[in-house]
Length: 505
Ligand code: XMP
Image (cartoon, rainbow, N blue to C red; front, top):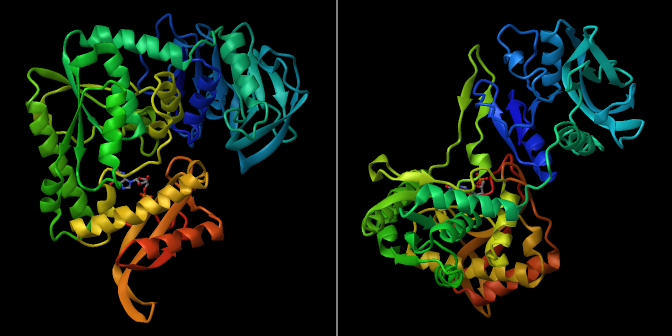
């Protein structure tokens, strides 16, 4: 595998993405939490950083751990650090160099195998390497950066000032391939099949005859995690799927059925009343979230206790949830972690097993496909844990849930019917806490307003409203008003995130 040391760059995850796309396994670790380096580590990549090596307190590592021992590639800050610690000069370049540049090969190099003489690369740096020690060979330059790429003599140590991991570096992936495959000698055999085989073997060994309880949500991650664990331990996996009364129309029955088809041992728990009682009279979004979270824990805990001798809690945590990114503010770099432990209380005293915690979302989908999971489950839009409760502005009643479920089902159904579902990252309807005047036949109406929301996004952090065809919106609007009693107006949300968010609460 390849070890990526994170110095805090925004794009460190992209380095991992690119290496994984080459079917080579890699892990990201913070520069100040270096794991033990075993024989399985074939090479190391230093990431970029928003810091400057000229600052006293900028992130450092002990170079003797790596240099000359393993192939090493420094990217941007990583390259500057290599130069700086070897006695080279790194200056502020006066202006930030950002964007497209043309890199010319100055010397042939294994890193440049199959790369054009002039290659478009992407720069993003404030500092620049002005001079390098004698044993550094400059292998690439751009118009404004003489030391755009170097190799240290008699070592497999390389530094590049630009970012090969971003797609604007047109041959960046070839360069990374030259490093991880050509120079480090990694074999390109990390596939979802091999992942399934090795993970199932590991789970068997780790779990033995122990019992595992896992909460299914109907989403991609928990479903794939469940099927993987089930493959390893079969009937010792106990799945719980809670109907909180805030799911989409018919979702509980449909999802339960598809889980049963997968051979999972699933208990569906109808806790609708418990959730509605906990939510009664609550209008504040955070209060609603808290009530739902607490009720879920109560229900889950009660069910888990019915399973004798259960030792483990299975979870669908994925890699972006656990990557410890480095906080580079302040003199002592601290680690910020995003452990998505689902908020279960300590008193449950269960050990946690998270078989997907090294995978990215699209890799989870690939593994799910390998496992034969229904494409309808794998391709589902994200859906918030608190469900329709945060799409009904104001307090929650079963009647409002019913209205919103019907509206949502028409909207999502039409998206699927017209082949638009997969082009949208997430879609849903929101029930507004207002009424508006309308006219139906000769009668004046005074009824509910619903908003439709559909967004495009990559990771939900930023999003744009989806430019759905007018004809499509017209059809959906007509259908909703004609079929859902109590709704006389439909509006479409045309706000992006930021400044709005995807959900309304
Ligand atoms: P926002 O509204 O913050 O949503 O733009 C970003 C993504 O997160 C989902 N979301 C939630 N998911 N519990 C969840 O499990 C929540 O409380 C919650 N709030 C928002 C939202 O659906 C979108 O995918």
